[in-house]
Image (cartoon, rainbow, N blue to C red):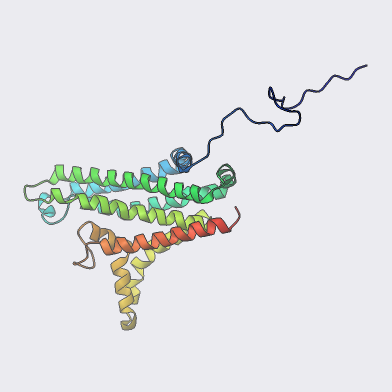
Length: 281
């Protein structure tokens, strides 16, 4: 009895020498940042956490903003922008962007899918950079659109001839930038901690602690200076200054607070990139 001849797993290509390595006929293209951006965009738009967090954010900013606009009159906007009602919604809505920023990276660590991501894209810095860019673009677009809707609705309901309707563009751009940077900071903290609850708790401390501690620090004359600085640069006062109504200082336009947040975010992002290359998945 003859034994049937076994076929090779990969038949040799025509003209190939015996024992030559198999070469796939499918062309292999080098990957670049665009591939990582497409991957992260697919992830962020296809998970329910994005829909819920951004949905609640829009509901808070637009809903509370329209309610405030409905309860005001044209005389209230003689020296403030028409977007000021959106500020009240952003006070709560910023927590949604922080939460989403954290979940963009920690959810993959929690499920173990980060191993698949880094296997498909071994350039870890490229993956993290794509997460930063995709999240910031989405957060900024949604924030700017929500604030603009409130500004347009307020102008339609309470617009007057001497109202500053033409001056509220800066509050849209800078207010959106501030809350988006808070979300990016949450993403950087989440990348460093790799734990959703821990990163969200840390970010809540960053936002809430400077708003609460000044009331206790200013009791002591020796700590009063620290309390005043924390009061000036906390998130609520920074946002109010960017909207033209600073709650603590009448001279600040919110730009110094925005620059401080930008510096802190860049430092945190640098730390996230540094730790990403040093630690195992």
